[in-house]
Amino acid sequence: MSLLMIFRVALKALGRNKMRTALTMLGMIIGVAAVITMVALGTGAQQQIEEQIQSAGTNLIMVRAGNWSRGGISQGMGSSPRLKAKDVEALRAQVPGAQYLSASVSTRDQVVFGGQNWQTRVEGSDVEFPLIRFWNLEHGAFFTETDVNSAAKVAVLGSVVRDNLFGEGVDAVGETIRIRNQSFKVIGIMAPKGSGSFGEDQDDSIFAPYTTVQRKLRGRDGTNISGISISARSANELQQVSEEVAAVLRVEHKLIPGEDDDFMVRTQDDITSMRTGMTQTMTLFTLAIAVVSLIVGGIGIMNIMLVSVTERTREIGLRMAVGAKGQDVLWQFLVEAIALSLVGGLIGVGLGFAVSQGLTEFLQWPATVPPDAIVVSVAFAAGIGIIFGFYPAWKGAQLDPIESLRFE
Image (cartoon, rainbow, N blue to C red; front, side):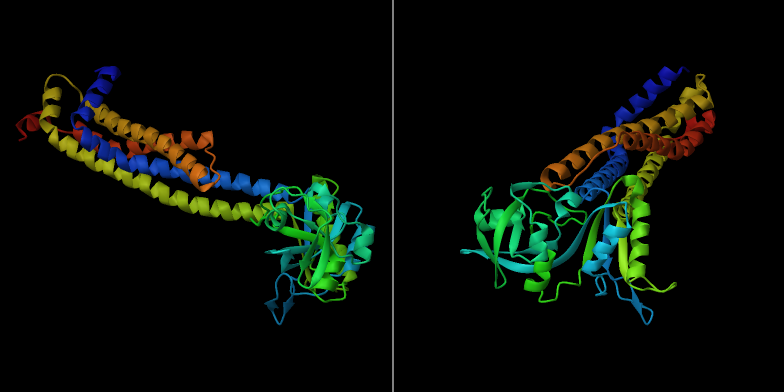
């Protein structure tokens, strides 16, 4: 029997009981759709992470106080008070690959203007902060070195803070706001930036000289800082600069060999790897569930094909009695199983696309379907059809024609 005839007979057999065929394909449809959706969400999330990391700054290295131990117990980030403003100057002098540096101190406070108030993050930074973060101003200017040295009460507003205090798009330069019990003059408005590397809204911030935040808002002497932001001269120097930064800080902090660092140094690559690793772990977990559903769908196909072989025993006997060979019967049932899997897989791909686009449209969740995911899903579906369809097909091919014709 020709291959074309085998296909025609197989498809005609599937069309006899359309409801059973559709229900048999359902497991494969759901499994492939789940695979496509999970891969799309994982890929979209990874792209978003990369965009957020890049939006945080150019060739960024973050130094944070902390990462030391007492009595064998890790104290964690921010637990050490030993990161100081003079460390910035030491790094500036001794690490030539560090192009821009900025001390940082942050706090959260209520900001008031007239009858409006807003709870936001007040970020104390240095004059090179916009260069490190590659962040432009929409109105006005950033504070100067003189402002930092004199702990001037000047502020640059993020767009979200500006919109909530003054109205959307308003140029608030020259206005006076109140943070805690201190009056600050608005000298600039930052351009909208979006989410940061950890999902925070970067625009929901106020920027002021770090000395001002320390002395006026946190009530300290202005020498201790929470962290240092550094921009390396090039991406190729990122790892080397981070190692040099750690070496200089160990000397500045008088740490002896073998003693734990009392600071943490993280690069953009470290942050990207950490976030991407978390996303990939969740994606693999959900993919495992989707693969299980595909296998369940394959078992469903095998069960239905076994039932079909039993129901069509007389038909098989008649075909073999008029000259059909065992391999013809095997191919017929195998083609039926593969057709169920492939059609179910293709419908599942379409459903996966629809679900992914729906999540993007209604939940604003990034979803990107890579072409290789489609190929792998369809190929996997066909493989499931071959694996789980072979036994029923082989069983049908082994039937004795005489016994089959007697079957009731």
